[in-house]
Every structure is written in C-alpha cells, then in structure tokens.
Length: 294
Image (cartoon, helix red, strand yellow):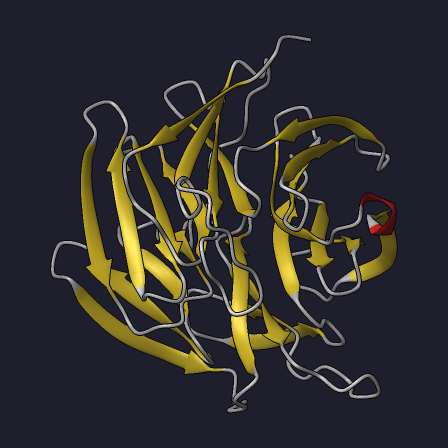
C-alpha cells in the first residue's frame, strides 16, 4: 500500500470547515465554513477561489441538478444560486430550539436531500430532539429517523441500497436498508468507534464500497470495509479534521476540511481550519449525487 501524500490547499482558515462536495461538471470543489456562514469554491487546476455569504450556521450543502446548491441551514432548507448570489428559502423542519440545528447532509441517488440534526448541551437523561429529514425536489419534507444526538457523515453504498449515518455523540455509525420512496429499514450497527477514542464526523464511500470517515477527536481518517473492519487509517496534520469527499479529474483525490475553533473543539495549529488534499491513495470515489437530478 503506497503512502498517502497530504498537502494544504490555499490559505482559508475556517472556524468549522464542513461538507466538501466535488462538482464534476465545473471541476470545482465546494465546502462551507459552518459558523462563519460562508460557502467556498475552489478550482484546483488554477487555484481560483470564490466565497459566498449565507446565513449562519450552515449545516451542509449538496449540488443541484439545475445548478447552484441546496443548503441545510439552522432549522430549514434553502436553495442558493451562485450566479445571482441569491438565497431562496425552502421548508422548515418546524423545530426552533436554541441547541438544535440541522447538520450534515447528502443527496441520494434519486435526487433527494437527506440532512440530520445535532442537539447540543443535552442533559444526561434528555432525549435528543430533531432527527433525520428527507427533502425532495417538490419541497416535500419527511422525518425518517429520530433519536440522533449529533448526526454526521450520511452517505450511500455504490448501489444506493445501503444508507450510512453516524451519531458522533454515541460513537456509532448506523447502516440501514434504503429506498428513496420508503422508510429506513433494518437498522444495524455498522461500526462502533469507542475503541478509537472518537466519534465519526463526515464520511464518503469509494468506488469499492469502502466507507471513509473522519475520526474528529484524534486527527485521523479511517477507511472501513463493507463489513465494518478498519482497513486503513491516515494521520492528518491537524487535530480536528471534519469531513471528506473524493474529487479531482479522476476522482482519486480525497479532500478534507477541518476546524480551527468550533463550539466544542479548538486547534491552534497554523494549518487548523485549512483545506487539505490527500493523494496517492490508490482508490477512487464516486460522482456526487445531485439534488433534483434523480
């Protein structure tokens, strides 16, 4: 197995970098600074960058089939048009609580957008509010799952039939049987990362069906086989990486976001909050699914 090469891209220093997604059409990477209310865009071939301001906090984004993005904001969804720099509000989850907000999200193969919530500062006996929501292109919203304390890393197997999502607070990645027009089914533990000393954060699945997830509290990225075994780990140069996606012309570069200062975590390393490219992994990712393009 070849050694991975890691390099920092650009000079951005996010408070809470998250939700990287690769745009194959434009050969650009998008990601967010959740707490600063920024969407970043980078063209790696030229180094050209752009920033777009939206209301903070941003939980996540997915590319739209007709251009722009769908966003998970504090307690509702929105569309953002990059050309017009215009935000159009969408449906709300109907939950306005100071400690609950939408967090990580991903489009499914059929063009829906799934995003879950995080419920911070809960009492030990307090059940988490919110859950996992699915938005379709007609702005119909449904609640798919509850009892998720800090949802992260939603992603799909290559055939779209298995859905993964982590509860970072409980240090478990769950797997479900998935249908775009039905409920989640057959919930089971995919992996328990308590032994690693960290919950999982953002995640993606490669073309071989292995799941790559960030171990946010110990500065590592782990690759899990389809049976849940850890088959590879990569040490990142910063303490708190957050999320990952595959991109590049051949989908063989793993892009990684990170934290400099979130509500719970802080890293004073000079590269903290930076964007990183992990190369020479010997694997390829899958094209990002687009909202409304199923």
